[in-house]
Length: 91
Image (cartoon, rainbow, N blue to C red; front, side, top):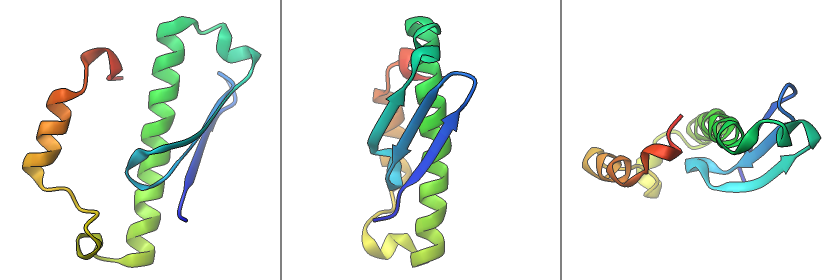
């Protein structure tokens, strides 16, 4: 399975995701609790974005044309997903 990690030593937040951004692991330490709810959410989502980009790049390097595997997303579908993402989740 292809995964990717991202860690921020300043906030104490670590994530592991699969291609497409499915969260596989989330680790928080005492530093993360000082961020408050909004800061913690921004830290997690920012790291998920970073790790997702890494995982997706690994898939492209390993497989090449991911659309043949059905992993590609049609632009109109990507837009509809973005439309359903709450503003409070966006960084």
